[in-house]
Length: 88
Image (cartoon, rainbow, N blue to C red; front, top):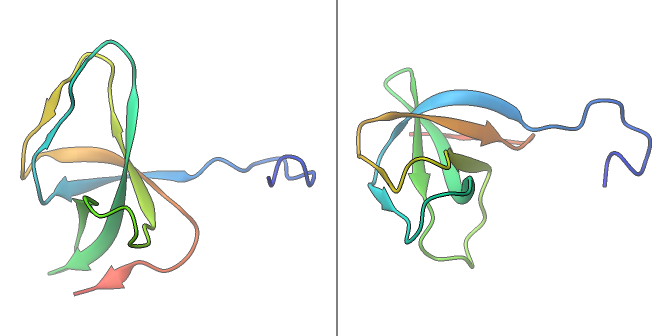
């Protein structure tokens, strides 16, 4: 939408965050994005994947094409949507 409005840079900012819950996808071979909530705890960024799609998200977890599973505690690439992140 921002690109249609003439914005020259409208890609979400990528950050590394600690994954709080394991993610398993059915098939590998294509990159995936998983809606998530990005928050801080003890001065570090943490990201929790959403399982309930009715709740708001403020980020997306990038799952590379060659991966089927991301483990809890792993540093993952997270695309932060502009807005607020939660401080816990």
